Image (cartoon, rainbow, N blue to C red; front, side):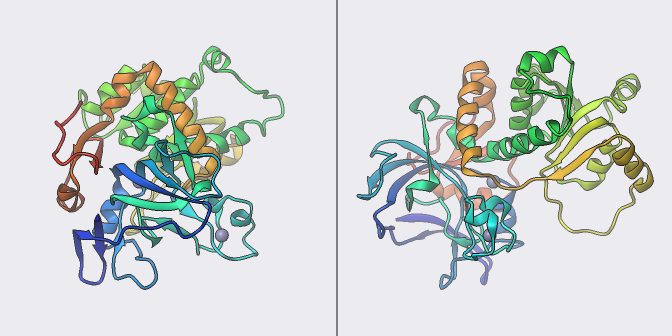
Length: 379
Ligand SMILES: [Zn+2]
Ligand SMILES: [Zn+2]
């Protein structure tokens, strides 16, 4: 069967013939892959900055953002049936008894670094015709979300951040569980840095939660990202376009910043705008470059004197995948066109190496194994 593979030793990315997987344990499930999203991590793997083939293989089948359909179930499965749509999780636990997060089912918090990640680190990914996985790693998707469920994995980043943020908010002794109406009444403001898929999906979660949401990104409006921000009721600001009075109004009054660019200079600049008792979530992974100058004294004063929380978050748990599928359903009801507009192209596996190696525009580009020919671009 066909698979898109990366060969780190010979620096090749190509479509290969890969042996079809078989069920070897009773709780396993065989899944036909329908759609795979391409993200920055995939592009880094294809630039050979990253990515480890499984032991004994000289290549890694790429792909971690996926949607599949169940073809075969082992005798010890109970939850999924043949024909069901499923999204698999990416990270799998490390083997160490002393790693409490992995042993408790939270490899996203692994402390040893010996976890595997399908399509990234030590395990083949999903950009292939069929995969086999344990039932416990598969999450059921309602058929109505067939066209957009490939966005589940990128949304899990915001879902995990939201989980963490809730814990930080409830550290404040007087705060009780707030409904979206209460959040709206209190005029809580959030700023999202970056208008890629992670930023835009984060903005959708914040809008649903009742925040007044602004998205800041480099490209001037109008552009596909700014149109999505406006369609969901948010405000879009591009580089250099923020009026002085807006900046003044924002200063010290932002309740939540969700960073999704990986640009450290921008992150630390915007951290200065964070209000008292407020939270800054970092999700981007910058490349390691020369050290930069930041206003360390001002930032440290603010963090202390304003009881601020700055935290990082990576990967996601099973609960975060379940929540992401539920929220895709909510977004699909509220903003069907804006949600679909996040997927800017669908291409064939044959076109995948070119997309992975070239400079691709658009928001989320998807590889589909379902059809022989490219679907029309866009919606
Ligand atoms: Zn990704
Ligand atoms: Zn671990």
